[in-house]
Length: 391
Image (cartoon, rainbow, N blue to C red; front, side, top):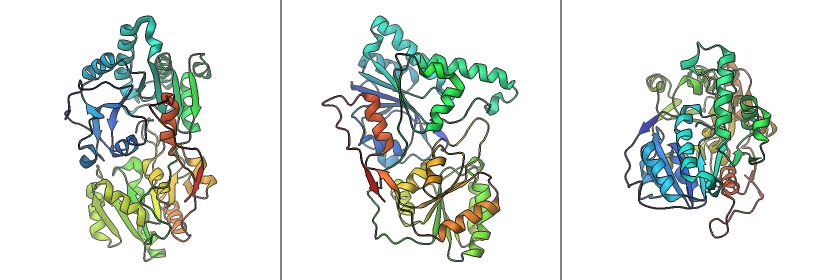
């Protein structure tokens, strides 16, 4: 994918050895949306190492299907349970490549010739290509990093049976990194299932929307918050009733608090729970995520974009997101160059038009991808009907 916010370790609240499951998902880092989606996915056990900064404690209460632990505990749980399906992190999430490979090699050694009894699957949204070096490896020759990343990606793919891509950009990024031949192995099945949401159940066509813009994510430069704060005075000058609601935590909290104290049109909420997040989106006209690349990092999809779409807001973002093509096709503002002036102009234009009417699937793209990845086994998962809803 790899997925906003800073991860934080957290001790397990329930023993990772407690239960066995037909489906096990290994998510190195979990966030609130994972708990919300899990209720619609096939029943299974999610094992994780860390919690993201946007984690809502209330959602994790009394959830034995989500267990945290060390890598050793996770490997033991998988080997003891021998699930029918094991989901692992995607090949281009290099930060967790060692964890994933240790787990997969342990599984292969324990299974021997019977490895195919356990289907190994992954969901991919990473769209950063090898021409972008990780910051900690910035001194490496680009050609050397391309070689290393190809070796790592191909080594990962040898263990995988199915890949669901959340965007076409994610598939192209993996092809660019590992080579097309790596995706054409006879044992590997692939499919693109666009990472589009359904209409959020909390929204209503009669919902009153204020003249507001929401920025709900980690507060850092790579998310474009500095540019947004610089652009905002021009937005208010053109649209005096406009309000900017910012929610989240991160390195730019101080700058955000200062801006909020300086401009009455900026409201800083800090880190908030999911109920407040839904309320902010439900009453807003525009969701903004002006992300920019940082080292190897590139916006994969953008949860603020997905949640803005699901709540019926207009979207202002950059071409970094994997949904850039879809957003452009649906008349949303996708900036190819991020400047305060361009961002202000896009926000002003988005505030001036009625809320968009998106044609959305009746089932969330991530849920559909999960159904395909696990094989939709009879008696385990009843997939939602395909279709389109207008928001």
